[in-house]
Length: 406
Image 1 (cartoon, rainbow, N blue to C red):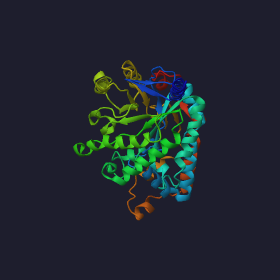
Image 2 (tube, rainbow, N blue to C red; image 1 turned 60 degrees about the vertical axis):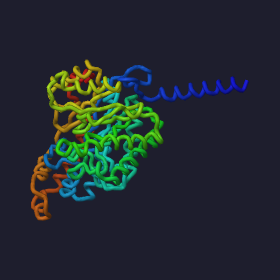
Image 3 (cartoon, rainbow, N blue to C red; image 1 turned 90 degrees about the horizontal axis):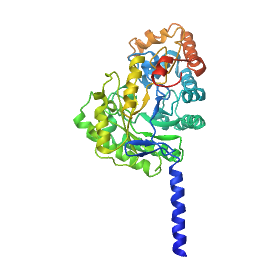
Image 4 (cartoon, helix red, strand yellow; image 1 turned 135 degrees about the vertical axis):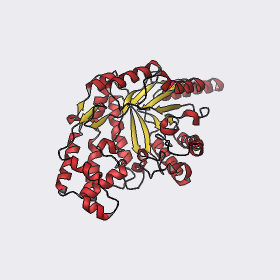
């Protein structure tokens, strides 16, 4: 009787465990598996320029990273007004209405770039609050859960800088790989995120580092350091979270998979990025070969920024090869190479002009300063209004090119 009872308890525990696991997206061989147990082809976009502003989407040139954008805005309107602007910006650029719309197009998932500073007490976008990242993600998760659209959390900017360009909001070199303190902070942040969301099934997984090690640096020196760091981060996550997928991007803009050995975790997905290439099989064949070699899923976390014909044809090529996609980005100002766009504010050219003037000394900042700061404030207020979903315009041919509903 005791033996039978033991077997019964084991069976019940197994059923409970299996049921719990079925709540989360998983993997099987080369496939990402949905909660229905069937293969799931990712189709979606990136919430770029939200928690991780980028200069080109502000129509700026050399002022390209969040730190530089904030410096320019602060020099134009002062620290208090800048802090107020950024708080309103984070509350306006992506709202529940945006997530509802994205789901209505037929997407099943969204990649969410974030800056690590949102989870530390470092000053970021005018404020110092280590809880800001969770406040934003909690809102987003609530909206995504309501719409049943899955999220991938993407550390777009890591401590010390993982890329060495504006992409990581750093200081021009991927210091992360040579600095133990930055690595430990990266690991700590991911573990903190995983501990908070370990039981949240609307989160699909964690994209550990966006586009590590740009092409400008010594790949022979830095590339061997990438996968060992991925292993450390993953090990820390697994101490608190066994449920979620781990997404690993290759070196050199997520393009080089030669840095990877055999898979070291049962729930890995390997992600690559490709822009401005020919629509040819050979562009993606090396990633397919990697998938076949190791029997693991691959998907493209970023692509796009091209004309509608290319958008469609490359999407068809990806789907022909069973590769899911997240096109970049969701929203931009006065641009057709995205899902929705919004109008550039009146007098916004004054901001652009300011960012293009020399500002390396206080004398230059004074000389570059706007004649009428109130016009700058009005332009920024208008940007906050224009970027709201209700004031955006869908780019219908772009959306149709993605095989979605405008």
